[in-house]
Length: 289
Ligand code: G1P
Image (cartoon, rainbow, N blue to C red; front, side, top):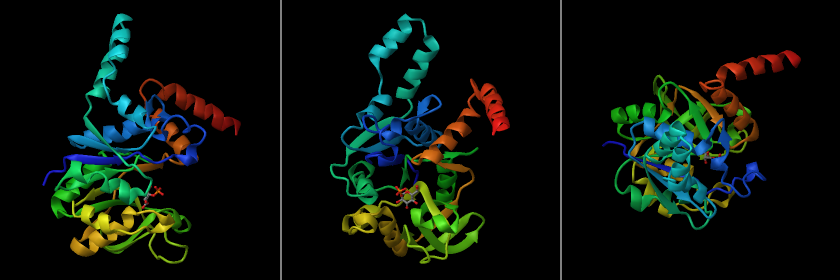
């Protein structure tokens, strides 16, 4: 079955970015010249998806506005003969069909995904977490869709992390069945140090069979007292099998201060308008260290 829909939870408070995220959603923080959420939506579009389902909360309407058509801005830019900018703004509003669903209580990532059940319906779908930006030749989601077309079961994107950081992630254990593909045996959300031998961490990209919704409905609070997606994934994996995919690309944790700054540098060095000047500046700075 074709993957047509992508769920993007954006309801979180963004406490790691306070005070910047006090009055604007952290998903609207800028990397070079666009908000982080736009990179995520562009990955979805480049992967051939038809619809984005945002799981939002109070104070997140700037995200919806960003992907909407802004009549006043369009008129002002056109009057000022800023045609290229006006076109670019229209392009953003035409990127993809965007639907939003409110998560009324912050009950966890698993609960946020469950909120999408009526819009997703009975078909496999993508989930992307807004903190994880991936730079790659072929979009990470497209790589996963290609694998899904072969295996027809749920897939989580994974990346090797230093053993001492495993407690920050969902961790998968399993057997390599071919290059980059692991058949999952066990999964645990943020394992206490020393409780797993695996260093394969889940990164925020998932393809899920719709059975996940019934499982999430029955999932009780786990790590941190929240309904954890990873707990429901383990139940889904036990029910019908699941794969972990070591994607090809570089991942940035844009939800963390250092990760965010690294992302800005990496994306700036690829931006056609500024890459040369910025690269010269970095070299100059490096010489001063
Ligand atoms: C979430 C998931 C976790 C995953 C991580 C990737 O955690 O619960 O399994 O490894 O994203 O970024 P969070 O970072 O939201 O605490």
